[in-house]
Length: 320
Image (cartoon, rainbow, N blue to C red; front, side, top):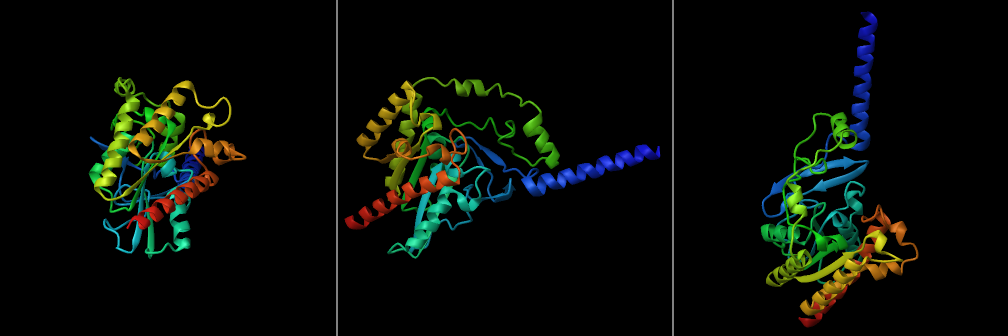
C-alpha cells in the first residue's frame, strides 16, 4: 500500500514537472485561438499573447499580428497594411520582432522618411488565408487609413478555395478554446490521429475557374484601395520546389502568366519573388520549410517590400 502511494505521488510529481516544462519552455497549453466568421471564414481571436517554442506572439484588437493600434493614425504617421497568409503572419516559428511587418517598421523608422514622424506597418494575416479571405477582412474592418496596402500571396493562394469556418474548433491547427492542460494539447496535436472533417470535401472540390475567382478578389482589393485613397502593391512568393530546375509545374506556369497578364491589364504594381530567389546564391537557406520563410527569408522579403514602398511613396509625392 505504501509502495503504491509512493509510485502514485511520484507519477503525479512527474506530470507536474512535465506540465510546467511544456508550458514554460514550449508554450503548450496556451495556443492561439481562432474565431469562425461567415464571410472571412476564420480569423485569429483578438487580444491574445502567447509564446510558442520561445517565440513571442501578439494579436491585437483587430486580429492582426501587431501591437494594439488606434483605428485612425496620427496625420504625421506613415501607415502600411500588409495582408496575407502564414507567410506574412510568421507562425509559431517567428518571434514578434522578426515578422516581415516589424522588420519593415524598424527599417523605415531608421530611414526617417520625410513628411512622416512615425511608421506603422500592420499585419493582418492568418494561416491559409487566400485572396477571398483577405478581401472579406478588408470589407469587414476597412483599411485603417493606410497609405499603402500590400497583398502578400504565394503560388498556392491562386488556387485557394472559398472561405470556410469549418476547421475552427475541429482542426487541431485552429482551436477555439484553451486545452485543460499542456499535456492535453501535446496529446491532441502530436499523438492522436486527427479526425477528418467530412464537410471539407465539398469545399476542397470547388468547381469552376478558381484562379479566375481569386484574381477577381484581387481586383476587388485593388478597387478597395482606390476607394480608400491608398496605393496597392501585390507580391507573390514561390514554393521552394519552384526555385531552380525543373521550376514551376505546367499548370503553375500557365497561372503565373495569367497573373502577369492580369496585373498588366489592371495596372497593378506586382513583384514576383521567383526570379529574385532564382538569382539568390542560396535560396534554400531562406526557407523554414517548403513554403514558409525563416528569419533570413523574412529579411530578404522585407527588404524587397521596403524598396517597393519607397518607390510608391516617392512617386505619390511627385504627383502631388
